[in-house]
Length: 275
Image (cartoon, rainbow, N blue to C red; front, side, top):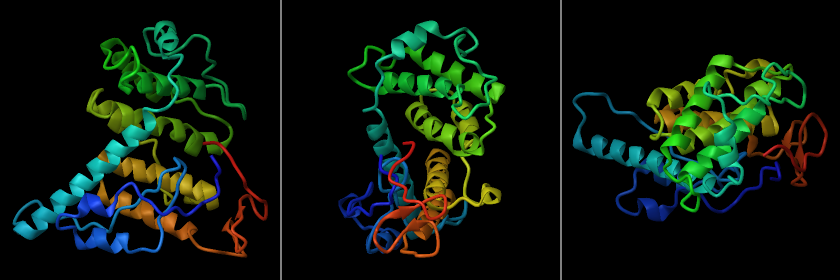
């Protein structure tokens, strides 16, 4: 996928979805001049949320909260619809070759090199998660596949593979983990998914790396997905604002330039990267 932040005139949430008494927050976002593209190739946005207190909620605010909950559920479903179209050709092979502890014997989990070998573990789980959800797969809703994916995630959390390069630790593995968690949300035990969300960072947590440009978009994407999985309006709202900070023309920083090219790693043209 081209990593340049193209501005598209569509969204995961459309006005039609909120044609029935839309909230002011949603309308405010719909009136923005453009929406924001992040690493998945989808445009993600949601309005500023106001979470009501647990008690003494007046009917108007309760209705607003319900609509916001439905909005998050809608985004979740559209993520799911996007992810299940991925490749799952080798899912059956990975199911058979996985060991009882959730690992694979041909993967060197101690590797820390630039071409980080342990990520193959997540790549395999992703194919398996797609196979579990794809209606054309022979493993649709397979209990064996579901349990193998859960074992694989638990092994990853326990083993905690790490690379010498910060990008694999903080962004690279998350780009593969995110679709696995979305695909298996509600299928595997809730703690397996929620433990996975601890790997999903926000720009503040990675501030020491001074993430900018595409790295900032990926990081904000992590927080966005975390918000969807945790049903956290705060995470989603903060992630959108972080993406918005990249949606500006600049001549002095990484990001979109005035000629609509995209600079990353200083004054270098960035035309593509890891999807």
